[in-house]
Length: 134
Ligand code: ATP
Image (cartoon, rainbow, N blue to C red):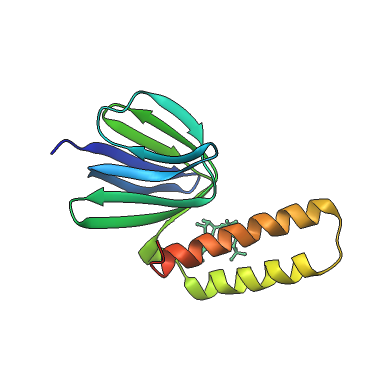
C-alpha cells in the first residue's frame, strides 16, 4: 500500500510525523480526503480534527487553524496549535468551554463575541478528539 509522509507542525514544534495511507480533515472549503498521488494544493483549515488512517488503525489530531499543503507523497499541516488525542487534557478543554459559554451569554461587543466563539470551537474540537468522538 502506498503511503504519505505527514507532518503536523506548530510554532511550539512538531506534533505528528508518520507515514499514513490516508488523511482526512476539513478545509475552509469543505471536507478533504487525501490519498497518495493527490494533486498539489494549499488550503486554509477549519478548527477541526485531522484523521490519519493506516489499515484499520486511525489516529486523531485536533488542529486549530492554519494551512494544509498537499504534495503527491507528502502532507504538511502548519497550525497555530495541534494536539494528538492522547495529549489532550479533556478537563481543561471542558473548563475552556464553560468560560467561552459564559462569555457568549454575557452582553459584549462583537470582538469579544467572535473571540469567545473561536474559543468555544477550539474547546469543542479538543473535547471531541480527546474523548474519541470522531
Ligand atoms: P485554554 O483557555 O485552556 O488555554 P485555548 O483554546 O485558549 O485554551 P490555545 O491558545 O488554543 O488554548 O492553545 C495554547 C496552547 O495550549 C497550545 O500549545 C495548545 O496545544 C495547548 N492546549 C490548549 N488546550 C489544551 C488541552 N485541552 N489539552 C492539551 N493542550 C492544550
